[in-house]
Image (tube, rainbow, N blue to C red):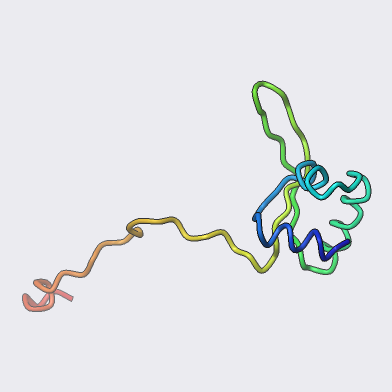
Length: 92
């Protein structure tokens, strides 16, 4: 059972427990029990979240693999580029 949860998170990234239970066809109580075991062993990171979808309040547990950090944002990164003119002018 835990292998299925880990494989699902590996292929789909961060997910709510309700969505995982629906896709994996596992009762929500059993899924939460398995996720708690995975979190205790350090394989999964979980946090409680509240989301508002179409005006409805949805509370659940968001889970992701502990070894799967979020991907870096695309585009330019903060910080200025070094200018070559400064080193020639004696400015360090």
